[in-house]
Image 1 (tube, rainbow, N blue to C red):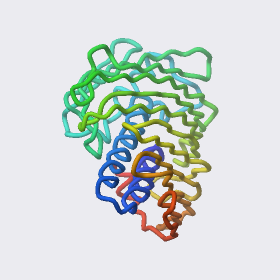
Image 2: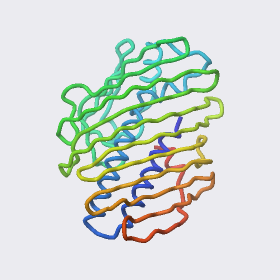
Image 3: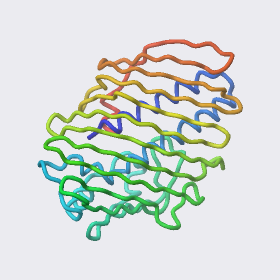
Length: 280
């Protein structure tokens, strides 16, 4: 399903809005880095295609672990740059994603190393996956830690997905970052629609970052039909700034911006490029 990538793009918009309006050049640079790193981490924690292939498997029954790994192996890689920096291999029920200086859309976290996904089938209707960064994996030349667990429950044409992941490392400007993400998705393989809710919390340097998205509903190739995204950033030069974005199915989103303590708030409509987000 492509809804997850649209959510990630939407969260990038949320953070860009919340930090770009602060007004101080240094705080803008710091905030933009915090935004980019966190959004990139959220994208990485969508499992880099290591479970996306499962959601689109047809049929009412869950595949066995090895067939699940085959489905993920065949899934094209998206959202990783530059082209050709990553490849997937399979050995039985294990898929390895090997990366050489790969990055996401913001270019703030450059990863070299491997993510290893191990699939299992604990029950007739559930496939589980455990993902971990192999020893020696680096982000921006520094040690990078990543671990996640997820499961996909098959119920007729619907897929119930849960995911929990965390990562930590160093930005290109030498700042430590850490994120933790918890997401739930209900997807329909016949209508290509999904509902999503979740949160990502963490820090970049001295900035604390909170993202939440609730009630997200959307279908392939269209803007979200419902949902609210919220982002909050708090640090030395950005004091408790936040943005709330409400989606209603149109090509615009309702945005409320709070620039932080002692600063004014504002509301605006922001145009969405949903086709571009889906194409990622």
